[in-house]
Amino acid sequence: MTVDDRPVQLEPPRQSSLSTAAARNLATTTKSAPQMQEISSRWLLRMLPWVETKGGAYRVNRRLSYTVGDGRIEFVQDGSRVRVIPRELGELALLRGFEDVDVLNALADRCVQRDFSAGEVLVQRGASADQIHLIAHGRVNQTSVGKYGDEVAVATLADGDRFGENALLDGDAGWDYTATAETSGTLLTLSRADFTNILNSAPSLRAHIDEFSSLPDQRQNKYGEAEIAMSAGHKGEAEIPGAFVDYELKPREYELSVAQTVLKVHTRVADLYNGPMNQTEEQLRLTIEALRERQEHELINNPEFGLLPNADFKQRIQPHSGPPTPDDLDELLCRRRSTKLFLAHPKTIAAIGREWNRAGLYPDTIELQGHRVPAWRGVPILPCNKIPISKENTSSILAMRLGEDNQGVIGLRQTGLPEEYEPGLSVRFMGISEQAIMSYLVTTYYSAAVLVPNALGVLENVQIARRRD
Image (tube, rainbow, N blue to C red; front, top):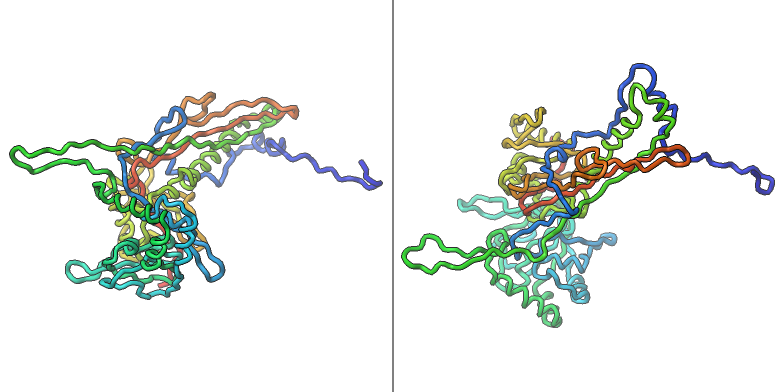
């Protein structure tokens, strides 16, 4: 073919199935089955208790909770200037559900940027508190004085956290801890005076705050759930309070997600190069392995149901010094009952081992499904290479309780699918094309649910790079 007497180069069609040359490698000599590096231990898929999910959705019913505004706050950066995203102020408890954009913009404009350096004292215990601090970047340690006069750690805060929220409404508020910067960073402050000025000039904000102020009248337990009234230790004919267990009116539903691919095999390959190894079976085996790897990745990272994005903010903690120390694992462990496993990237597990050695501790090991794995306090520490590592060489460690009966973390799937090949995974023959290529639709449906918030905890911003002594 020519255009203006010039030859036109036609690109060969893109290959869509296994070539006969590659297939012949499985038909001659003594050989192994096809290998792939992507296959990992996939401990999460092996350890999750899988719950049959008919109808494609799973509803998590919980007791009614009044806990509000526990999300992290996000910021935008323009050079060295940092500004809070106005709508993100809705993550504050007293502004949760407030949607007047003009007022939120006015509040964001009143936030003053403050850059701090490592070791700087941001607030002093005992001083008057008249502003809220929003941490845009950096780590801040909160300390106080213990019962016997020694200094005790209260909390470690990082990007997106805040402290001093009660100071915006309480004129008598004071700092009951000292906040010291562990690293350099940036925070934004909003003073009570600026907040009050906007409050007095914005009727919509005044009405919202009045409604918010009535929430503490609702009796709650320490988890924010509606309290069940009861009497104990009484004598005689004391009046016993009546009670009922209130439920959430809009419980969360988890819909099954899907991972799919189309496997293509040329009929000539299936016909001529099927011995001693079945080409279709080997292609299908490797495809399923890749699909399972993707499934585990989604269970960790998917923004809708992944364990990392959906961990409750009250169950996220920061390491005390950066690397994952035994003290950090203890704090993560003590926040829930019946923790069944830790999950960490292999590089994070190596960092844990270094900190054990630094502390002079000999790591425990336990046997799990025929494997010897490291453990802390009898809880196995299992590898998962789907947990991301940031550019700053930080990662996360997950700790979880498992099972429906234990109000833990569960996996969701539906079995009994048409042409099911494995539980929750089907392989459907789609036909043969005019190019003599057979197609198979490989599909798996899955999701994960956290039944109560404290079933899953995360140790965030764990430094995994080897530190210099």
